[in-house]
Length: 245
Image (cartoon, rainbow, N blue to C red; front, side):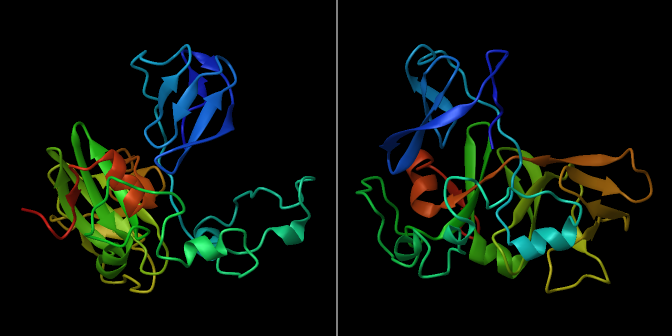
């Protein structure tokens, strides 16, 4: 989820129809430059080699039910788009879904020459970049752990994950170490955490907020949820959660 501000100018992006390493190439409508969608850099056109790297926002891949339970005031993009009929949009696990065969196959659609066999190519990971350091957290491992205190690129972080969906939210943690609360529901992502001094922190979309002082906040860090083969192509030097040296 990238910023739509390019060089101080508000613009929109479109799909070029091109792929690079099986990843979408987008273009901005202000300069018609082509952008690498995975890393947010312009690669062809007026902005190429400009050193721009588009900032992006925290986002999460989750289920509609899980999101609705946490955010009942939310709005949603209507399925009555005027382009396809509403019944065209079916869940990804429905055999009628456009990419059903792709998602249920172990193979990628196009050749991938930078590969790693640690996970299946389409295993889903949550990827975090801090400076020059990168780390991948397999969703299946996060679902088991639900809460991970970690350090990436010299930054102490905490990962809060759902046991059911692909949701993995990452926050700064300073010098604190977090555990789950006594009233923690193991069937859900932790809604609150306890630090090592016993202070309770509420988990929000933008940060962790201390219950004893709402001015104390630990910011959420943008991360990327992707297939393993996509993450590894752009971060072949990545660390992997659970396989730390």
